[in-house]
Length: 273
Length: 131
Image 1 (cartoon, helix red, strand yellow):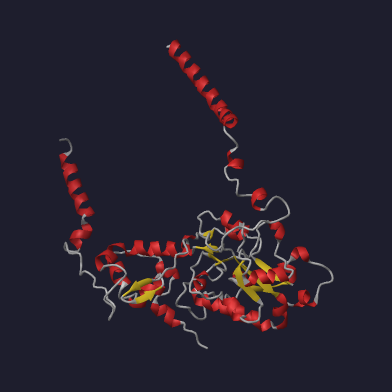
Image 2 (spheres, helix red, strand yellow):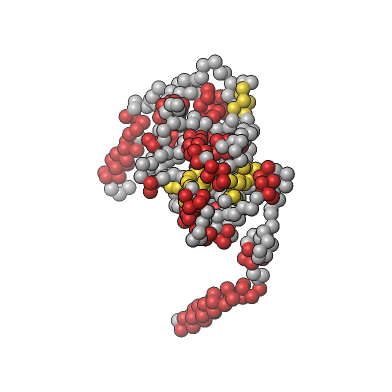
């Protein structure tokens, strides 16, 4: 009897020691898995160290918002917003806290809080700015999504959403530094004024945001907001990686700023202020 | 066998209870639904038998192709091109959800979630552009 108890205690002790010791051994023997397994992602390589930002290859759709044009004709911004609402079956909730935003108006102080200065231009002081999803190159919403309902489309760099998969956890809303995502707190259908039969609505409990009109691009059309201010140059849309594209010509010529560059998300939407 | 007196009646009661839905309906599965087929369009994206079995899989494939793989290549049916999608392809011919989809889904007691977001032709027409 004593013999078996002695044996049991010995084995238990050895097992406990092995259990404590094993993680340390694994740590010593393996290479640093997290640091080395993804050399392309993260801070250093993708951004070319500090400072200079290195452009990726492939198509990356982006937009330039020329606020000078919108300041001249503010109705154009209303038309752009209305076009987007109509195309995407976006509800108008009477209570602002339920507001669904794809493209919306915000004052300069909210759009560029880190650029807030005492003596601003007249435009920055009084004109509403056009704000939409930045379709970031390094989107924090995509990292936060537990179901991969939101993802970057590798073909064009659009930060897209699959509403079918959204579970409404709202992690993406917390992660987005631009407030570009909205949550359907209630059934949106009664608050939609006219249906676009080619696009679905959303249901209660789903997050939504601008999709850069992926469904229109497939038909060879421009995004609805860009089309609404066609000819004015207030919104220029195109491939940021194509040096001959219209958008790159505008970016080469004009000085542009972006929303919250310090967040490191590398937005695709540029502003001429 | 011990307790024959309770076990056998118990089993009988159990079997009667479990098969209740069958004999309650007189061993009859009810009239088989006849979904209204579109008028004038004889073809579909796949033969009828395959569509009957696998339309839900096809819809999921289309969803993933359009949203995730950026594959929005049109489907050609009966000489006409359609964009992949429930609203943009299927419902263009099967334009009555109540008489087509629901007839079988109600019979089989399936409640697909499609229409939580997607618009039936009737709903889409209910709020037309007014200006």
